Image 1 (cartoon, rainbow, N blue to C red):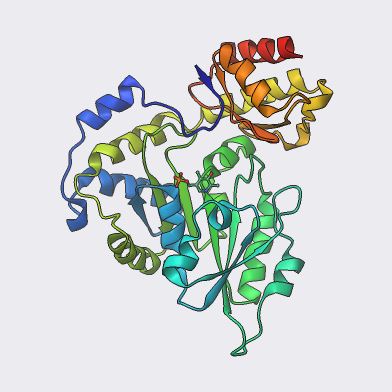
Image 2 (spheres, rainbow, N blue to C red):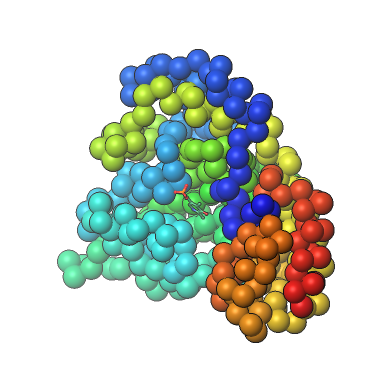
Length: 334
Ligand SMILES: *Cc1c(COP(=O)(O)O)cnc(C)c1O
């Protein structure tokens, strides 16, 4: 099966499994797992942050960030379609008493800082205390410009806000822009990285930031049940991913581009090539409906999630030959 539903579906390769099998381990709740410690140091170093913490999922990494920055009754300004707001089961509100203030993303995925400014609440007992701004990069496969990131930093300094990046796919942005991931991370107080997306690890995310914030996150992680023991088994997969799977993200982007350009003339799909910047192609469901289309493709061993607007995601288990097969199958449908 060629699975385009998400870049989370990748399976660990033999080399990664061998790294996992031979990982040195210890009890990570006692900070004694050497492999986890190495991964945390590697990521902190790569991102130019003081420290990082290894967690089971990106959802938990973002939640730890919000819980570590905010008290009950404080507020987070976030995108209406952002993962941290829409796709994390309301965790920050449920578990942290943190009020989300969502605002629409602009078409290119940035939050208009003028609109953010209008949402900042005055210091008045009627209101929650606005504490943090959350951005996402990449956002629906689109890259936030570095210039915007530094404007967001200056904005947050001016308004005494913290700044968090959901960087689940930040490495896709850095590879595509050809910039050091440090330059993407620098404006942010904290940043989340997913190892289990395009980087190809089976499990794991990290939250990076300053020592103080990360040590608060460590306490929250334990409370949430995320304190794992011989977690070096999975951290080893993360180290393998960082050593082997970063620069190859470029291939995923090229494959997405090839797919998008080859299908762009099919009007019903309404592909916007400007939005194809990394490993995602968005298409409209054809007239006969998303289910009909998805079933047709499934018979040709291609998996997509049937929605009105569908996301086709490339990743390390989708080869260039697979892209040709997909193009043929979609063309034959029409
Ligand atoms: C996948 C993803 C996450 C984290 O998801 P988990 O499935 O919990 O690891 C966070 N943000 C974005 C933008 C994502 O795509």
